[in-house]
Image (tube, rainbow, N blue to C red; front, side, top):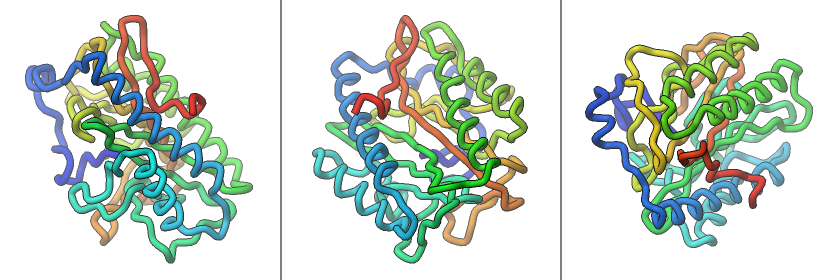
Length: 275
């Protein structure tokens, strides 16, 4: 979960590099062990949602399941109440990019592209992850968009290693998305994650001179989350002041993992294949 343009979360421009470096936390082995559990809870919930989602359910149904399961695993929902957000998941459908508010009147239908983003707070640390789900048969364009979004996430993650740079992640994501004819949403970014749901540094999905090119160090924990649209990269915020949608009504997809930087490379803490 991350809002770049919403002042509730982050400024529209990241801090200068010196400030970023000073504020980026390097987690201890004890803290990493706790984060593994927080991330495992998130991965478990998202895996379950991917298995139970079906036409006729509402986004509020998914939210209720997520909150119940997070609490059953001795954690609390990271999103609920965060700057006033009313739910435990963000559930965004089709042209909704991010931060869709679950609603008992919002029914999921065959052909929908559903983004589910959630976080869990466990023993002082957060895990954060997002998946995009195709509900039943979707259009070829939607299928390709979802595939490229997930591939872009892993292209970015493959760049993670102590000594590499944030712009290595951004460039790998941008290149893959644009090579497949889609656009990278620039209004929202990834972020550091740990004691706080959103920490420094901002993890961009596109090359920009405005982002300090921070060198990665072992012990950093990052939420890497490419968001891409089938059409225009631009977004607008709905009247609820949360839900971001594409300006041209095109489809949007997103994937996110919480990732630990190691000396040798990376560890995907929210890996759903491990739960």
